[in-house]
Length: 120
Image: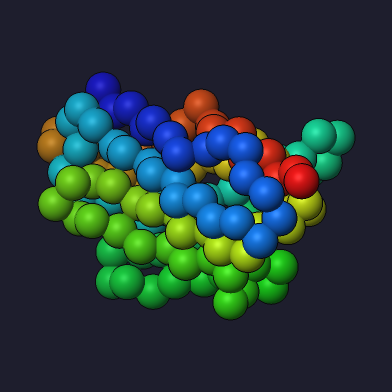
């Protein structure tokens, strides 16, 4: 059993910052790839960025220079540091990870999401 849990969402003013966390627990051996998605009201799910086990990182153009993805391998945790937040960044942020379990199986997992609101 593997669980992904996001946290760190909240309400912030334009220009503010938040740090989201995605923690994998259970039968986790390693996180191969972790991705952050977001979905605003009435919008399609959008890939915000991703990080793999080699440290390669990709960002969507809409967040480049403002968001940073990092990971703490020993804690099976991935972070999304968001700065200079804009109203259009408001969404539910979801973590998706490709995880190798301690039983030797690899599979994809989703968290339940954490809501980010940007409002003055």
